Length: 346
Image (cartoon, rainbow, N blue to C red; front, side, top):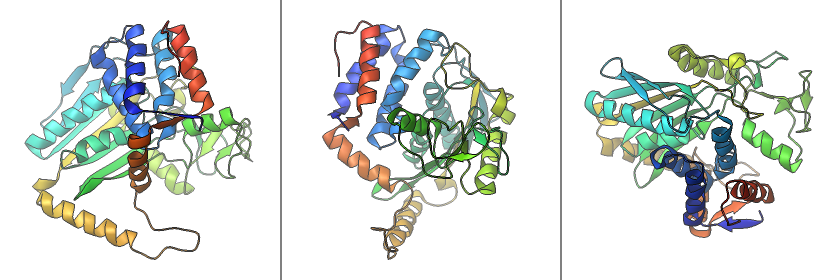
């Protein structure tokens, strides 16, 4: 990494960029907060590096900067949000907020989103629920990027899903993962850095495994048929519930053009106190994950972790020392700052 930047400084710069392209603060602030949180947690592929892409999405007409959200409540515990093709993060925060309110009143809340765009890291929304003493789920579909188990042609997307739960005395348990070992954004980072891939992560245009990021055209699911099966479940909970396009019928994230992507998401909040006292649940969660952490590690491992541990450690470091930036990210930001007429540089 070539430079670090404090959270407050990069937040001010990003807000100024969005102001310069005439996006309302109420529309862009969830995006700013979500991407900065992802970078602080070490999820750099879904962090502030996406700001130039999102801003160019506004300029190209792909992303609607002035959405008119339409929320249709279909029962006491379910609803559908039409995002009007705005930022997926803004829509996701709004949808999970509605799911949480439903769960507070009725025990469970489920909101699906249609006509959306890239929603960043799924943890953004799951953590919202966990911090309200609820269990949270968030899923999204994306364009056709992954070959199915046994196949040579991509069909489903990386189709991320997240599960979160509150824990006594520490940040929530958080499993946030794509159904591939590598995300598309991480592959794009490897291409920029010309960094060799591990075998088994991607295939070339002919469906053959490759370690060359520049030859990689599609990804592979984790766990063979298991990851493939989970990706298919995510698709049924997003596009098929919302009536939106799936897999090969979704416009690609790259190259960026003016096409609306019509992505769909799924959010659920479950009120723990409807099943167990929250204090008891959180205490037992803490006991269980601490017992896992105390298991003797295998050779080559420092210790046993549970999902979310690396992100918690990185957050503590970065909130103190700043977010590390690569030369590529600095270059992308400086180009954007120049293009938007902002007289500063990173």
